[in-house]
Amino acid sequence: MADTWNDNDLGDGRMYLKEQIYILEIYKQQSLSKAAQHLHISQPALSNYLNHLEQNLGIALFVREKRRLVPTEAGTIYIDIAARMVRLQETFYLRLKPLLETAPCVLRIGIQRIRGASMIPKILQFFAERYPEIKVEFLKGSFMELLSGLESDDLDLLFGYHIPSLYPASRYKNYSIARDTLYLAVSENRRDSVPSDFSRLSDETFILHPNTQSERFLENEFLKENHIVPEKIIEEDTMEVILRMATMNMGICLIAGSYIKYYRAPGIYFYPTDCRYKTLDFCMFTKKMQAAPKYLEELAAFTRNIF
Image (tube, rainbow, N blue to C red; front, side, top):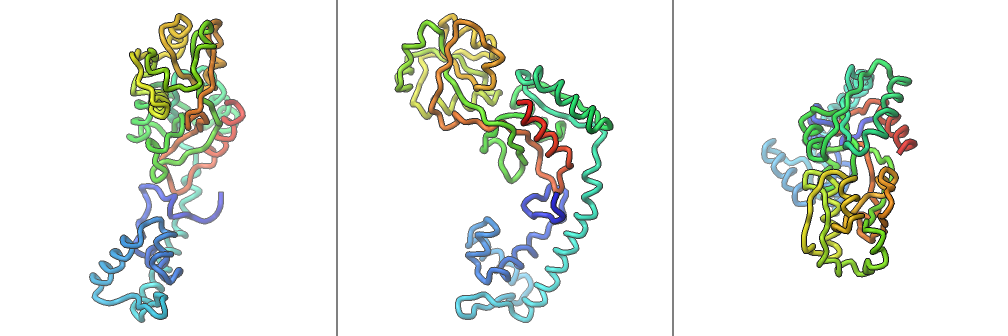
């Protein structure tokens, strides 16, 4: 782990120095537009921030000279003090880092039930061999249950598919584990009847997961992208039951490629899709923190080898 901190990675327990960081970036770039770009905010927002600060201080911090922003005498004083404050914060986090890397007594991991049988024993073995001082507890549940647990700090990390709208990068850190694919599953006796234009499946019955499961988000995306409005939707939360229903011609379903090895039942055909989520990123998620414990990277690397 590098011996520097990144402001974008600071967690909820940080000391906030946004004002100082903004002004230092304006000084560094000598331009509001360039500073805004580096800070990932809009130029008007940064300009308003600077104007508001100068109004509160009662003095200008920058003047424009030949299309460059140059600090005034007051600005030079501010920049000097702000730089010291940022360096002090960096020193603080570097001294705090060893404490953050100390393993907790209990690590709470959320995992979907379908993954539990294959992943839990191996993860337990990983901690028993490398971090025996850590007690690992697993919560098996639906996607929404796990995400709620992570958000409420009842979980320390969870495994699942990376859906950007549900795991915003500003709040969550994701460790990519594996790439997965999305398949259409139909009864073997109708494998040749699946149209290349999936929109023609609108008169079909689809067997989908409940809205509380991440698979339903991917299923809805597939339907939306292919302009499919199913004649009927049957909801079922167990993949094995869904596939058995498909083999009985009760409907069409969708399945991630990594699940197929668990359900290689006769009478089912898996048809690759062209959904933009056909390549799925299976990840390990934690809340963002200033300095992540080193065992997280090791666990992610270990999990990549067993997925």
